[in-house]
Length: 265
Image 1 (tube, helix red, strand yellow):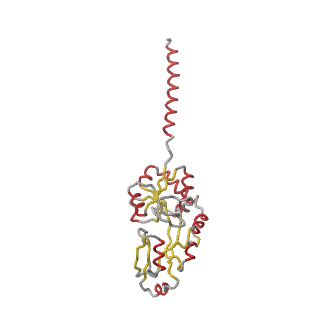
Image 2 (tube, helix red, strand yellow):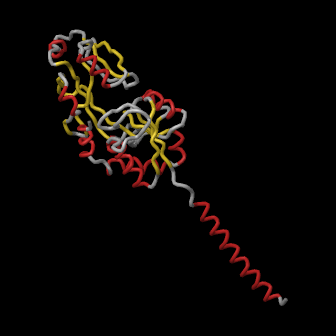
């Protein structure tokens, strides 16, 4: 075979082989979409999470709907995992799950990654939601007088909930759930508990509180921003994706859906 013809054949063969390699490489790059394993409490906590147990109901809660919109916008899949709250925290620490929603807490800073401003403080503009908590007390309990005179009070909150500033001389009584904490208030065993009273800048409360013999004490006792806390493992794998996800949260927040779930049965 003439040398020129041989070189031409080799050139054609090499081009075809290179095209095959590029095509194969392209198929390898097209991997399965990234999945965000999101853990949240297996007890109803309206308006954020609806229903109890491991099953995710058809109307899952405002936070779950919010996360579905945000993850879809950035092109990742969402896997929902319901566990007791303390187990969610433990699994975030060991990277068994990728994310949960919580307020900033310095005691969790070594295993959570959250949106930050240039000075390292939490970036409230990228919070997933904002809330305020008020004291809820039985209608005939002299709570206001006790607080004015700085008398001792008893206050119930669910186990595992983040500590917040309380009035002086407050004794905490552990509860199994927010409903249990309210039961303790209604039965007169404690003076008060904390309940949602403002949501994303709007005064609001759960509908079922209207049917209970309790009053809410304004102004709010505590205001907080909730952040999508990521595991170290998830953030380190793709910091740019994490930033895009945080940026998508305020853009996909539907305040009306949060208010809607306050009327959930």
